[in-house]
Image (cartoon, rainbow, N blue to C red; front, side, top):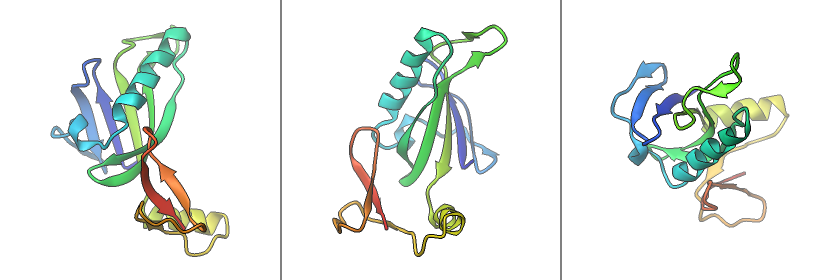
Length: 137
């Protein structure tokens, strides 16, 4: 996991660790567009019983990450502890990650390209808000 972040209902930092190191300087400003949408989706999912994790691609400090979010909950009580505090777990999508995928699935030369590259042989990596973050070759 590249980063773990917990935000309060007012999106203030409760906890953050990046690459295993505690960070107190992370805020919503470190994320690209789409974080608010992902947080809203996670918070809305908790209103119908057990929370349902929500996922999508986000930028963190300018780098593409796969993000998984969920409100914090106590599964023994089957209810949310605070249905507004959200856990965000992030996995960096970089050359190392893509190399592992390429090896596991016998794919050759997987790499990220700028979002402006419109070649038909590329798969767009779309952010939560529908913005193209990059393309995958």
